[in-house]
Amino acid sequence: MAEDQSKQLQELQVLEQSLSSISMQKQNIQMQATEIESALKELENKDKAFKIVGNILIEADKATLMEELNGKKEIAELRLKTFEKQESKLKEKMQELQNDVMQKMK
Image (cartoon, rainbow, N blue to C red):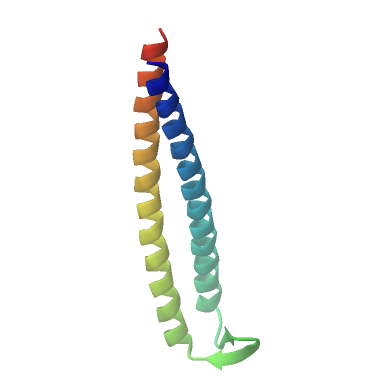
């Protein structure tokens, strides 16, 4: 029984590491989405648009740039939803495993 608990504790640690990794990735995507949203708001008020290509800043078509940013925003939102689902499933699995371990310790 102690070996079984040991395996469950190891699995719990792996799940915690996975959850931490997913949370960090989710946070990065949230930051990207915020930056994209900010760029879109800024573009709405401007007549000219510029885009960074490599190490240089070039003038770009505002409509095309907004379309690109909206596409990136959509992708970021989809990825964010995916990470949220993964995070939720991991938390649920961790809770079940924790409950199981606690039951066996009683």
